[in-house]
Length: 183
Length: 180
Ligand code: SF4
Image (cartoon, rainbow over the protein chains, first blue to last red):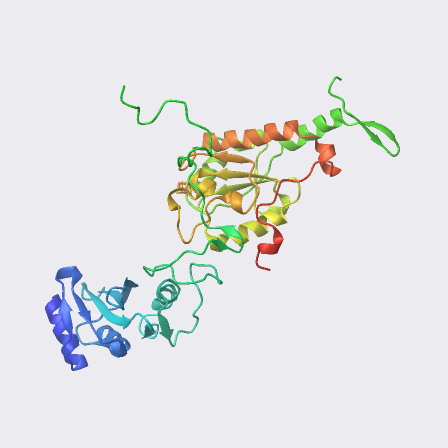
């Protein structure tokens, strides 16, 4: 099935006109956040759609628009076609339904989504940090993330060893320069 | 016997220098390292144990438990999640233990500088004895690092250290700041 047909068929199943775009492997559909799970189920079970593989589930932070875009990259081994399912969440209180009931692989992706972007996942069976330490503060992949100075007493910054020290504080470099100075 | 050191104890005078030499000789030729790696440098660590570099011929064999290991090799990128685990392994090793920081990542965070996930140098969590530059250091280089540890052991006043006359290395990550 080509992307336009997939987009049309999903629109029919949901009974709504959806925002679509992209071409070929980049084709995408934007669904409202409250229909996220419904759309996923339609793609998985819909006649001729058969998206049986969740490639990845990720997000993009857009502070200028006050939104977080969530994208699920889907593929069908049976029909050999691909689609990106997207939704836009409110950045202040992002909240989305878990896709674990449709593709169990989504559970780990959602844990990452939650720790990195702070997207709350509804009905997730095991919402713990996946990659970061259990007590890590904040959501690092948000654009306005500020790194803490220390984590459990470990400094999180290290001065660059080759940085020029402020005048009069360090040894003077009298050796050859790299790049060499003009004669 | 010019290198015989004399120490005065309650029971009389003891010569410790030659015993030191003897003990150090034994220790430096049975340098067992902990088999553990955190990232791509571990591949070179495996090579070092392999037939071409063959660390075994120097008495360096890997141990899979920290209880039997003398050397910890920080082979690779250390994430914050891994930091407390590494520290626990280090604490489980019996004294006197040595640490090699292998590769740019373990030295300074390397190409993960200013990352939210990577510790900016292994010496922020455990005391490091030898730093190896490179991304990754070649097996020859790691072998050289291990031999530097051997040289360090050779010069160590072992008995004085055992008796607590020499303070242990400064702990960069003392217990109080760590999570229980
Ligand atoms: S120094 Fe290079 S090879 Fe070693 S862990 Fe870092 S990135 Fe990998």
